[in-house]
Amino acid sequence: MNRTQIISNSMALRLVATLACSTTTLASTTGDPLGACCHQDPVHGYICSQETMTDCQALPGGVWYGAGAGCFDPGVECEPIGWGDCQVAAGMDCAGRPAYTDTAFSQVFGDGQVAVQTAAPSILGGFVVTVFDLSGVDSAPVDSWWSLDRYSDPDWTRDKLGSVYGLAVNEDGDIFVTATRTWNTDEMGVGGWGAVYRLDHVTGDISIFATLPNNGCGLGNITWNCVHNSFYVTNFEDGLIYQLDDTGAVVSTFDPAAPWTGAVGPVALGDRPFAVEAHNGRLFYSMWNESTFNGNATVSNEIWSVALDGFGTPYGSEELEVTLPALGTHDWSAPVGDMRFSPTGTMLLAERSNYTYNSLSAHSSRVLEYECDGYGWVPSSTTYGIGEFMDEANATGGVDVDIKRTWAGADAMHLSHPAPYTNIYGFQGLPVAGGTVANSVLVDYQDNMNITDKTMLGDLVVTTYVEVPCIETHFSSINCRFAPGIGVHHEINFGFSNMGPLDITQVSLALPSGVTATPSTFTGPFAPYQSYPLATKLYGANPGSLCIDVVITRADGTSCSEELCFPVPYCDAEPGDINADYTVDILDLLLIIDAWGQYCDADSDCRIDQDGDGVVGIGDLLVVLENWSD
Image (cartoon, rainbow, N blue to C red; front, side, top):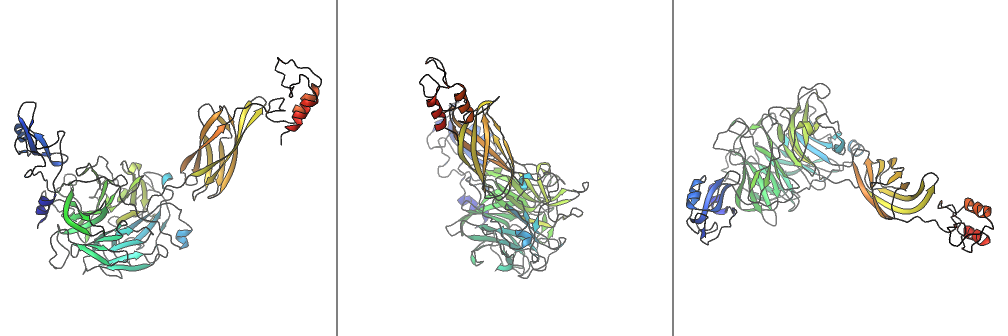
């Protein structure tokens, strides 16, 4: 069964316009009967709606099925090639952070996210896998060189791994890379051209995780499906997608196109899956149908999907999800080398400028975003300008996304700028709302901006985004106080616990209108995982309940706040507090002595008469002594 037949038999496009389709005869406002009309929509492809015959035939590609025909009636077919229903679902975020014991990592890196990127064996220094510390990303500069820490195990070189491109990271932080022939200069690693390597998350040691049948064409990409505990790997030799378990054993194979003939590879364009990603119960994969600089108007690169059963094994018929648009005025697009699904359910695609399976160009590949509108995947209004050269189409075939940023491998983010930002080649962190180099974090693969790494950068994975914990606030006590020239105020004793892994450099109080505090800012450092008592004086706080925000600034420049709520008492002087300074002390005793024997009129406010007998004497003195402040 060919692909067109598969779609025709399996893809019913359930698109209904404002009027619901039914088998009931309807009438239009003109009196003409309505019926099912299949016509072409500029956004969704072919859709079905209720139209009159005249109106239907006037629509692009309109086919009318007769008066009273419903959109779901037998025989009513409205099936554009490659369009199916979709569901909005958050993408998987399974990549864990490595914990290498090497002091070059453990004593240097912060506790935040890390990025992992692959590179060509011809890269300066020969390290084909590098891990980057993103801990300080929230305070990183934009449109400028961000100097951060990076780590490569001494064995992650072309001498051991050879040429690798595809990249996946499991929950433990183990890195998995696939052997490839897609660079301009390739070297075979110790596992051969069909190798999937595992880089241990603690030691960094290399092991051969799996060896797939391959005589020299190399593999495509790899992804980890943490829902079904399965890896999926594309193979350029036979055009199959291999399902591997977490030990590297082959669980199943899936042939997304024509059956492999056994001919010496690589498999032909149109039979060649490349990027692969599991999402919402389906396996998505790109089909490499045309190459950079080599296409025509009748062929396009595509994204397909197939259902996964409870064991993560593909089953059923394939569905075409996306047909990629041509690049600019060309009649071709670059093949998609990597894809990810965002926390909001959008699909991110990263093209790679391959013009054959073993030769690579640059400056002709994009990062594209598609969103599910309930009917199918449509281009998002969000755009990502990658690099600053050649219409911002400088993607290198790697993309990832978290709640704050879309990350993309990138050439020519800066090219021939004044020192020290001369040439920046590596990866780019853009706002998820879209952007360009101008509002992006820029990372150079080697921190060497005297050279360009054109055609030498590959796939990219960023580990799971974990919100750094804020603080826990603690209320202790609040007391009424009096100060000469200031009057009544409240003294509050409170504290906080630093729950995160970084020093807190400053704590400040955000107060409601009309309330002030002295002090309102406290300077650290406050070390991680410790508790600290604080005290301040509040002015203008009315009796009742009051909430303030305790705002912290961390050592990496990030900040957060935690609310602190507490009761505010009504301030009335306690017994023995003659001068109403909210402290019973020697001053109150002296006032009693000075007024000894004085008579107080019962109708007047004679505060000095503490026992209420109308005369200042021993009873009032005893009240002062009984309430003497500690």
